[in-house]
Image 1 (cartoon, rainbow, N blue to C red):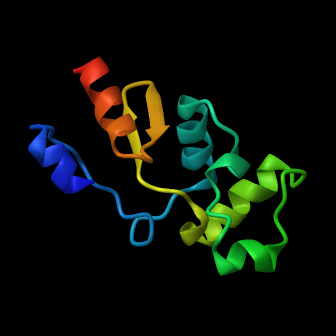
Image 2: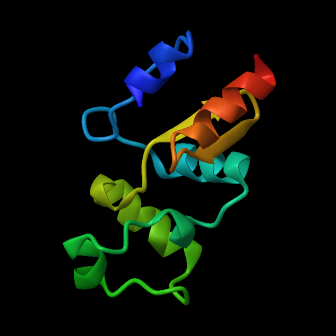
Length: 102
């Protein structure tokens, strides 16, 4: 991601969710900016996903708790610009969002 941003002349602040973890409130606000439900940003191939037995029927509140406790569950990168955010998979989605607001 960083290389793609540099190649496009985009300055950014990088947040490492493992060393600077989300609070439940912050994560909830970020996902609302992206217009997506917590279950949609889960990395479903992660071992902990299977261990926790998460499913589309799991209440959003419990999914948020799981992501805060296990940051590896969160699909990344997430690009946030102003009042919008996007899961940047592929990274072009993040670059598009930045250019829209640049």
